[in-house]
Length: 489
Figure 1 (cartoon, rainbow, N blue to C red):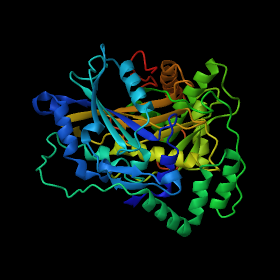
Figure 2: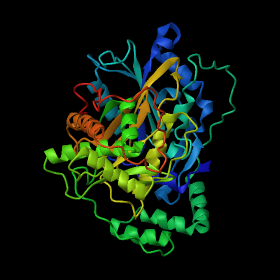
Figure 3: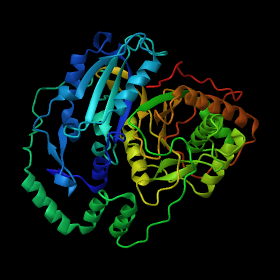
């Protein structure tokens, strides 16, 4: 048995029907590179089973201490069955992008079974109606609980099932030495909890805080911080995205030409964070203003930085998109963003690591006042394959929390920048409208930067910004690609 650390345990404790603590990656594949140009489900089962040895989390499950008196433990699941975790489904006709987003949203909204290893793979076929995908394309929706994601390397399981070559490797049938554990008894767990409490009394105060109402929780947090005064709460401007989140989700995305994003950066001197923040800020301002719900005070987004997260200003009070970008740049010039550690693994596997950073910061008593979240994660670096099929694109669906009913992700891949969003369906019931606002905001920013004079480059390093290839566009026009009828699932 191996006990979870405090941070991993928090993600388990905070997991609830309306706030499941997992990340979902929607991966799209072209099977043309596989043997016979297709990938059968039975082959995928064998492919995943042969890679279980690559990541310990594949076969580990949680055992919780009675009454949650101590952090849970990992054990090697004696009832592990790979077929429970790898599933198969097909979209109904016409199998378009809207239906794919609805299905992904529903899969993402469903909490995971915490009594089994904390991952699920769902193979999705029938994507013939999704614009831009080759014939026979299929998707993998990979769900991983944040407690099972490495805080540095990210999702080791997702990395384990991808290969740099279509052929991958053949399982030689040899045993990897894995042995299941037996279930620990209640008495053993309680005895361990007792001695852990004696060794770590301040961790017990944190455990106690989980059972207290909000007013008492601050007092318990002060105990856990050994008497340090709790910071005064900071009010967040009210938006429809605030308040308790419900159990349903929506997802959609816009795909922007990366060359145009790089041009905006070069002309304006902005970082990637600033450009994406300006696009998101413009979209939120347009969406809320059309509903008479735009606060006078500017809004901010929670952005991973260094080993934590900061509030990135969105300048939603700006009256013009170029001015919005300059306001964000000015703020980042004063307070440079600490770069994230460089990616050392399969880039998309870091989406969950970014979500961990954000939710950890959001749970702090001195969390910054934010209306949304924004996280960039590395895209696909060269060709990678799943069961012989080439990975084409990755979309990340991230966990939400109370007062954070809208979250954005951004990744550069295949010459494009994909900006996606996950939202509570009750708070954002019309994702098509918001996706259109993102597209319009990007278009306006491109035009504004074309007309604006070059600005000084911010001194903070932009994370994971690909090197521009080819010359800049002659105008600010942006060819934005998005499917019609986005999801409302």
